[in-house]
Image: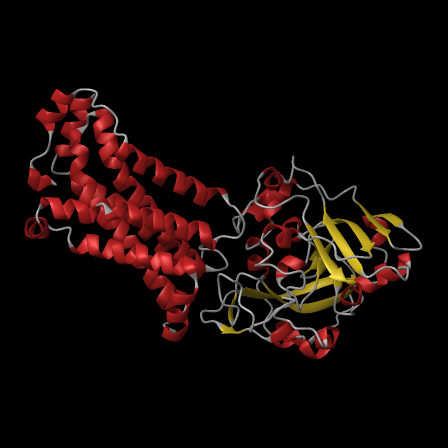
Length: 215
Length: 262
């Protein structure tokens, strides 16, 4: 089972398929907007959906390493960068729809909101972190920064994740369930880094570990 | 169909929001916090039999079945509705002035406020099982606000019986205040000496005041109230003080600091 999964994930179709799947939420939302099925407030709904998907991809990307360690499906590591970049992509769509559609490039209002509203300040902070991580996501940047510094910088992803969850929690009215669930998942994934699960079968993991350039 | 005598308010100049938007984009946390939740979830709400009790500081307390209550003459009022979240609609309501109902029970000299309560039914209103607010939902007005001719008890909209997701069988509509003041599915009205607790104010007192008059000058602590998007529009528009009903209602607040009494 583990070997089959690994083989499947290592096939040359795996990445294009995952890439295409990751675009489904975007295509679906655009389709709903086009056909007028995005509800009474399509602008707010697109802002909301892109934000949710940014958070979801961030959590999926964060879950890959614990999942790899826990299941021994080493090939999961191949998808970490791509899914992390999709989190950045959806966060960019989120910001662009807010700036361009919701506020219609009212820079004064946007600037004021970023400074004045803590939930937007925090959301922008998370976006700045994600931008830095996306910019340093190439193999060239890993080399230039050196593995140690690169890893230290990319631990910022947890800050971005927690920031995203806090942003969500702070913008809704009342204590709603969804942002609490996202927050708990993010905190749980962070905790797993501190108290990692034992490898079920270190040998399998070692033999199937991807080459560094698969990164 | 509810018999109506059309009485357009000045909001008639605004374009009426499509009925589909008004019935599918709702805040009714008794049926979940998503905007589309009530349209589906409120189908479970049973609006018959339904009684309203009016008690407290009144000479003639009253408990009346909804069908008996509906025997008053109805009128249509086209009102703007401004949600505290920053969106707005224009809705043709059908109903009668709250003042008429209050006069029937003869408020005593002690009555200074009016408290409203929504049905409590966690089996059907499954949102009441969550901790998002303290249930049942409560709201309140000062007596002079409640007696104002613009304050409406609505039982219909768009020429039809009020859909469940919009607060059937009877709800309050106070067009110069943020939408959450216009409590839905009312079962109890109590006249009181002191200011009654209200659901959102109990939940987050700094964010939702007792008065909650629409006011572009006073921000919600987490967002600006200067602009709003009319549902269906692309761009935002400026929010008007008292939601554009200042000529009618501003005098209720003469001498009050509306930044303090937000």
